[in-house]
Image (cartoon, rainbow, N blue to C red; front, top):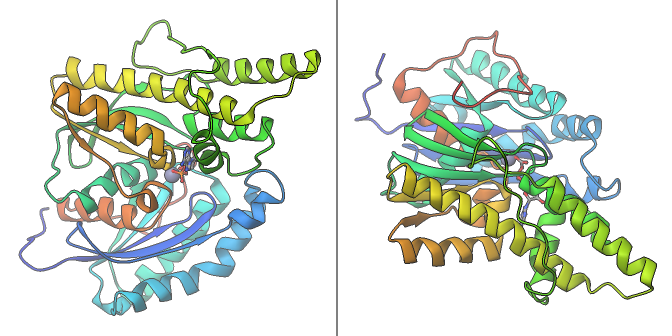
Length: 343
Ligand code: KG4
Ligand code: ZN
C-alpha cells in the first residue's frame, strides 16, 4: 500500500528508549514543527549513569506533558496528526514500554495509525530534517551510547549494517573514560569540552584493528589503555593531565571512526556520507569528517547537535518514510530491547 503524498502529512514522534522523554511534530518527514526534549540527565548524574527503573518512572511522569507541549508548540492538535510514530527498540525495556503504551493508547483514542520505529533508523533519519536534498543511497556512521554501526542506507527504510562494534560502543567508551578521569556522567559532552584545552598528540593511545571484518570497531582496548595510563601516572606519583588524556583519547576514537567510514564510502562506491547518534555531536569528530570528506570529494551530512542525541523529531521523520510506504502497526506492538537493524 502506498499513501499519496500530495496532501501534507503530519507525524507525531515519541521517543523514550533511554533517558530523554521526547516528542515532536514533523511535516512531510522533513520540516520540524516542534521538538520537545525533557532530559533526565541531572537525576541520573547522581548515580553516575542511567538507572533504568528511575528512567521508566520519570518517563511516566513526564510523557503526557511533553506530548502536549510538542503539539502546542507546533500549533496543532492530536486530531491534525496523520499518524503516531514511536520508538519500540532497541533500548531499555521499561523506558521503551512507556512510549509504546502511550502511543498505542493515543492511537486507539484518536483513531490514528500507529507506526513502530527502530531507534537507529531514527538517528539516521535525523539527517533528512536539516539536509533537505539528502536522499539514499549513502553511507552513515551511527555512533551513540549503545551502538557504533557503519550502515549502507540503500533506500528509505532499507539498511545493510557493514560494520559494528565488537565490544563497547563509541559513546560508552566516552562515558567510561570520563568517569575514570573524574568528569562524571554524561561523559561525551564533558570530554568534548575538556579536550579543547588538551593536546591530542600528547599520549599515543592504540587504534584497534579487528580481525575478520575491516569495518568492525573495538573500543574496549582503548578504554583499558586509558585506565592503565592513569594508573601508571598514579603509581609513579605523576599528575595526570586530564585535558591531554581527554584530547588524546578523543583523537584515537575519531581516527578510527573516520578511517573506517571513509574507506567504506570509497569501497562501496558512494559519494555521500552522514553521521548520526549522540557521538555525532562531538566537535572534533565533526571537524575531522568535514576535513576528510572535503579532501576525498565526498558530500558530508550531519544533523545539528540537538538532533544527534535522542529526540522525537528523528522518530517522526523515520516514521513518515515508513508511513508513506504503508507500514502500520497494531496494538500488539511491543518493546523489543535488542531489535536488530536491517535483519
Ligand atoms: O544517541 P544518544 O543520545 O543515546 C543512545 O542512543 O545511546 O547517545 C548518547 C551517547 C552517550 O554515550 C554520550 O556520552 C554520547 O552519546 N555523546 C557524546 C557527545 N554528546 C553525547 N560523545 C562525544 N561527544 C559529545 N559531544
Ligand atoms: Zn540514541
